[in-house]
Amino acid sequence: MFITFEGTEGSGKTTQIKPLAEFLSLRGYNVLTTREPGGTQIGDQIRAILLQKENTAMEWRTEILLFQASRAQLVEQLIRPHLKSGGVVLCDRYADSTLAYQGYGYQRDLQALREIIHFATRGLKPDLTILLDLDVEDGLSRRARGGNVNRLDAYELEFHRRVRAGYLELARAEPDRWVILDSRQPLDQIQQQIQQVLLARLEKTV
Ligand code: TYD
Image (cartoon, rainbow, N blue to C red; front, side):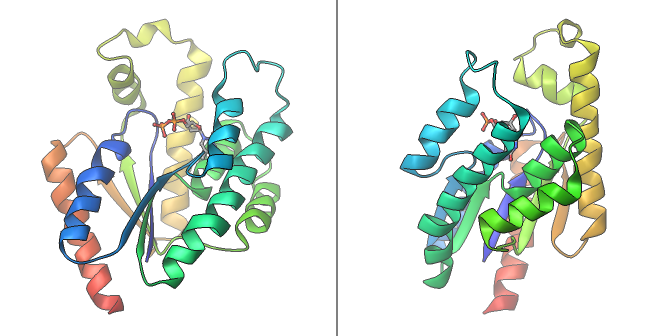
């Protein structure tokens, strides 16, 4: 089973994945935890290029393709083999991040993005996607560790609002694949909800 975690900055996806992997491993599942961009040696090098602040000259097409290049490597090198061996994959961000950020956030052509994603992943879609949904101001102030959201310019706030709205639209379009959780809840409560959803789905597939 292929499970992805999505959400805007500061939504707490990464914090939830580690205890979840331990929980599933204790129940005997063979769990692979990974993240995007990155997750492989080649992907981590691509990640460094994407996140390097000096790379301000990066063309938006270059950026989209680098995300897909990292994804293609991760899918073929780790995700497909692990799924084939019967394991569970937990991935921190996947193709929906491209649709939410590049598509809804930067307003690039969604259909073109879907085609590039399909090429990069050979059509591999998650069985389940957990959206940790969070109000944009809450998320950005969490990320800034109590810092002042007002420092962020209006464009940045609008961008993150579009990303969040994009996620919600993607989830509404495929309700069987997505589970939306309110990320303002206490961490252990969210963890319990994720565990319940997963156990119910995993038992169904046995
Ligand atoms: P990262 O440091 O992994 O952030 P987070 O903890 O929020 O996951 O940075 C990943 C950034 O890249 C994040 O801002 C989302 C963005 N991103 C895209 O814009 N498109 C994509 O396809 C992916 C995978 C990530």
